Length: 325
Image (cartoon, rainbow, N blue to C red; front, side):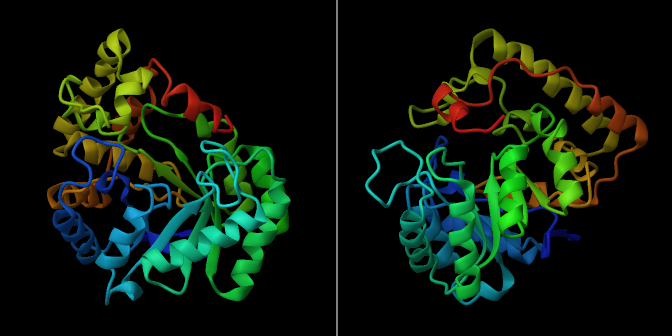
């Protein structure tokens, strides 16, 4: 597995997102043993970059990762996030990146992860009620104290990124980016290259859509976040299947799977990009990791660059409001 740098932080250029092991998707949390095997298999395959958050579960995803890394902590770069759960008394659903809340959040994450440091600590969403300078100032103190090694932002816009980076170096920005979500290309990616900040695409497989395995939504249960995402609804879904069909055509030509093609395309977008495809199955982590060896031709990249845009928002209305787009 090749490695890249997120700022000064070295990671495998394909990581592993853990959210589906504990929530958000159909079948989450039903087989912790398989989830732990998946984490261990990822490490065996050279994946070092593991992504969780306190809100996943909530809390139980960090605990799962802590158990999985018992005796293996030095093999992993652990990223987790704060800011969606309030620890300072704000109402449920209100973002909280106040210094007091961060202080409580980091101690909880350290305990659940069973570690004395977090490699990459992200603000999960930008808190409109706390100046970013105050948030990053507190994170910088945690770096000095040795509890956090690198600082990240998630779904932050260019102005916020610049202001944050002026207080303390930002190692990485994590935002949704894939063949059907190209929003960061206009402003965020050029800025990150300018400032030497890494980029971590989450949902690089379009929440499973770009794998070609989802041809209907009838098997989603009531807990599955995709039941509320416009891209997976009605006519939007049918339209977006055309994107998958074109990815499948490139995959057949390249002798790879659609998931591998979607990930390989992301790896062509820059040498500071580390996507974190999520899964809870060993077979899928083996498939996704193999994308590291897929070499796309110039013609294949051009075809993928020119796929038709997806129809419908990438998230429900409440979550879209939390993103700086």
